[in-house]
Length: 93
Image 1 (cartoon, one colour):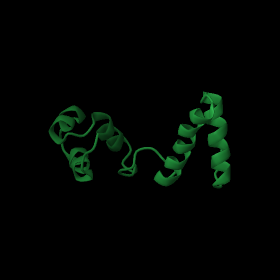
Image 2 (tube, rainbow, N blue to C red):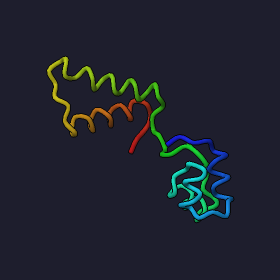
Image 3 (cartoon, helix red, strand yellow):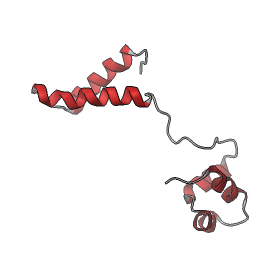
Image 4 (spheres, rainbow, N blue to C red):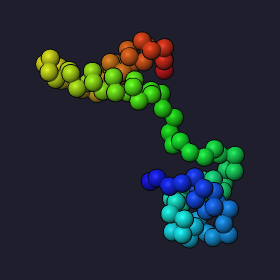
C-alpha cells in the first residue's frame, strides 16, 4: 500500500486509535502500531533489498533464459544460480 510519509507521521501523532487512524489517514493499522511501539523505527523502505533493480533484472533474465536451453527451473537450481550470482557481485550469505 502506497501512502505519503506525512500521512503516516500524522497518523502516529494523532490521538486516534490505530484502527481509527488507519481509516482516517489510509495507512495500515499494523504500521501505525509498529511505529507507536517503536518510536526509533525509521520511516519508509519496507524490506531490505540485497540487489538493486539492474542486478535483479539481470538475475531474472538468466532464469527466463533457462527453459529456452532445455533447463527446468527448480528451487534448487534457482538457489544455486542466485548464490553464484551473489558471490560474483561480492555478496555472500
